[in-house]
Length: 120
Image (cartoon, rainbow, N blue to C red; front, side):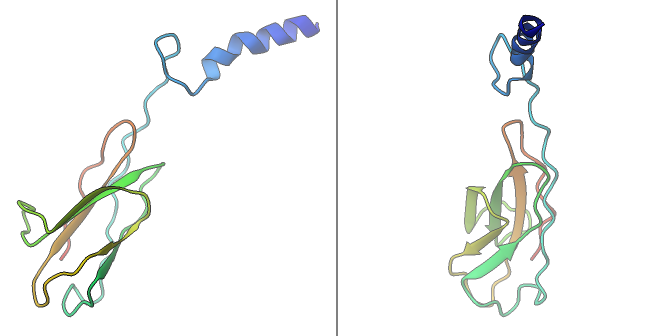
């Protein structure tokens, strides 16, 4: 009886492994949800620099990318960083009395989420 139980356990081990290879396909992680930005009370006017931006955690184990731009179309960036682990990022010195827009997306081993709606 013990031999039968050991055989059953050993035969199921490859099916439950978390490692993906040709002999053991594992489904990819799901696409993470789009992060939700935490709005600033002062709507980005008279912010002390360096500014700290915060967003809500996306489902799953993700890294985040943050873009800050002076353009609402995000055609150029004053700050663009990836592989952020936390849901808060300090932004270096910004020009006083300037308007900036920011957005975040989440990524994992499968794909990246859509960009959050940009806030200023």
